[in-house]
Length: 228
Image 1 (cartoon, helix red, strand yellow):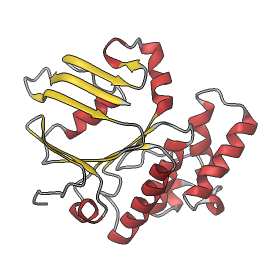
Image 2 (cartoon, helix red, strand yellow):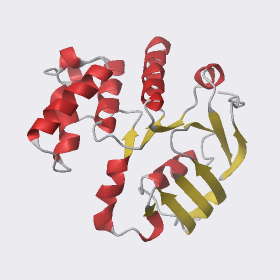
Image 3 (cartoon, one colour):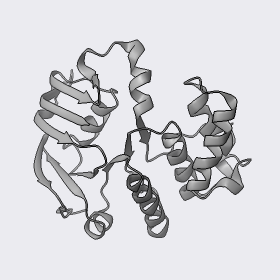
Image 4 (cartoon, one colour):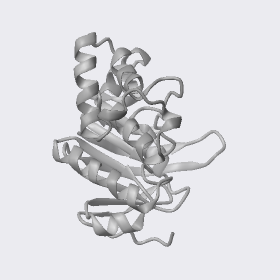
């Protein structure tokens, strides 16, 4: 599903963020991405949804070869790759319903499809009763659930979760983790960057540990292994 071969990423300031990366992630896997700050985690994730391009090497997501993907094709890639950010990135002037519906409006879904799917995903994340509320009327955990609903609205094959529990209290973080597990059980590939050692160690999945732009550990049910 996701494959990187001999990938390097060097930024204009001279920093090499990714240094000879080879990795394959299969459809339906749940993968943690861990490591200290500056290890290359964010660059790795950004390359999957083509926010960043490799300096060298090949990046493939499904049928998309990202290195030579034309700009007009990027929206088609991103229909297959949903992204959830630590800071939610909800549109403040839109309601919960409108934030989720917007993800489908921009790809041209018809109004009936949009209404049906919006209510489906809001039901899945437990927020169907808050469709008319605005982001500033929600708790942090609720905002993250809206962000997840929006990210899966177009039924992506891959969901990237970049520190999805980073700004949340422990109880809320576990609720978000349960939701991600449920989405993964429905067949969506989950790639989750995290510094939450407790979650990684209690809910075991494949673990990619980054150090100095390389994968230092690739373990089927790995432990976190870093000081927070």
